[in-house]
Length: 338
Image (tube, rainbow, N blue to C red; front, side, top):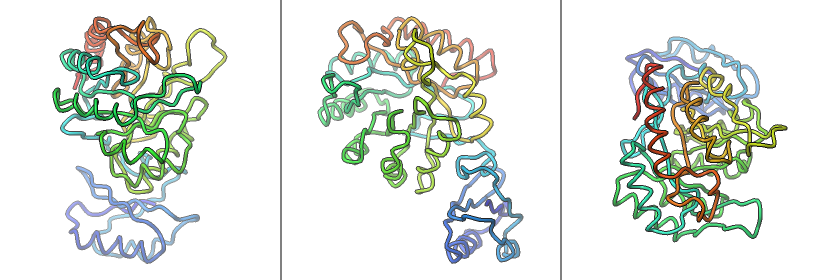
């Protein structure tokens, strides 16, 4: 349910409404907007009798949200959510690009990539300090040492850091260093991790699971938001199909569908979808044309020597070319690069 408040409703009136909601055994979620102030309600298992609320001072109307996912729905919040991280914004009119190596390998490589992507127009640095790998014998990441390398790169370049938390045990230390905590495709339905992310109050980048429906994807985001963390970024990164050429199949149709269903920012990971560097730039172009709010791309100065996912990593010159091409597409659809 959504309670729409008057534009000039006082903080006292809003808090009184929230108090009544709590007395009903439910959870209120104030949702500020430029045109209205609203209060989302979660925790109800059946239709709520709104008679007690509609007559309260400052209340305009009560709307019953029809979707199973409430806080992620555009019914709850018509305006686009913009996630602001140290001044770098994801969502809204501008297109944001996050880039970096798949895994943090060394300070030298991380700095070289960070400086290059910043010069090309990227607004955030990605890199995995903890790596969930299919094989137990593959490189698992540098752990806290990798986090410290990312923090050093942020200090020297000013780029906010995006890195993955692979489980609840390491979440706190990742959140200590990261500006955005990523939850990967393998963990999209790790509900303990999602709840912990919701309590962390650190922006979360949530990747779609390889076999997840759009509804399941949005309900995973709902787990985070229901714990009070509303700064969630959705990432389409490809789903498993019968194709055996690319690593996954990038679901381009999910981008406009998500933009219609949710107010959350939607970005795309063409690197993991492709699994091959030669497909990354075409998929990036398609994602921007379809309405994505940004990209997260893997870049490495020498992909053939990368410790993780070198086959899908762009060389620096290729990344610079990608940035030029998507900038042209952004202008063609009435948007611009962040």
